[in-house]
Image (cartoon, rainbow, N blue to C red; front, side, top):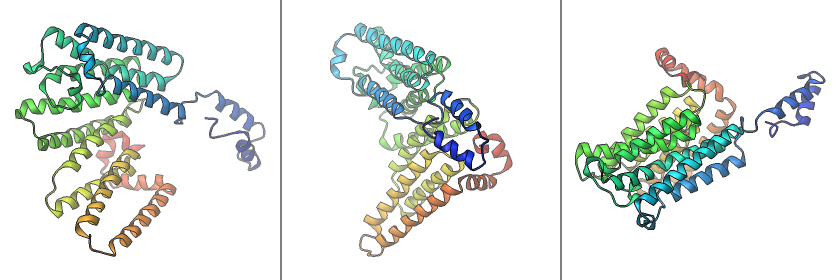
Length: 346
């Protein structure tokens, strides 16, 4: 809190008549007593998340084949120790009022659950749908029915962890596991082999469903679980949408309009993640126009420059009138929708 306000700022407020003499020091003392994590994203938080991603990678998609040769019992013991120690460490950090560090470590512990279940399945010789697997690395690259127990266990572990440490980032490994599960269940439903076209469609519909779920959750919980849910949902939806084969110009134009709608959703919900993916989609469409449709046009770069300047101008307008624009957009929605979705009332 004190990173944004200091004694000079408050002294100027006293001179302007906003605060009474003496109130500035009392307010400054109050702000200094507030936990540093509130209302700010500090450099230390970047270190927390980066460190967590390194551990997730090391015990996940970067796990080498050498680990598959140490023995299933050793693999289970190591994975279980990782989960136990990370959970204990996270609980200790939570008691010491370090919620961000505690939350990311808890998420790492949840992300290692598939490895422990993988070792158990190898020891027991039991695999869902009798689809035995030999290499854990393929969990992140191949759609197989044998991964279903690992994915279900990850979701359950995430729910339990949220009871212990209610931190939104724990939603991320759960969402990834659900995304994998949607692929694996779809292969079981459609039959093998599971084509890239089917994967794209499943990813698109799963992402859309996840967005709807977290749109309903948004605004109903004390912690902002929707933040990471939106990221997972829009990534799955946008990825599937972008990889779809739009053979016609109309299809490509519709792709652009959907991305524009994502940008509008960012304004409506005040969630920058929709703006990021929507802008990437619009940029991809404009890139297609540049290289395929208007490759011989001298005016296209000029027109695109003007559009870019216009977008920057709109950004400046939005920055100044964000609350009013959001309020106006919500006013266009029917009353029942605003009542059903608390996120729209913020």
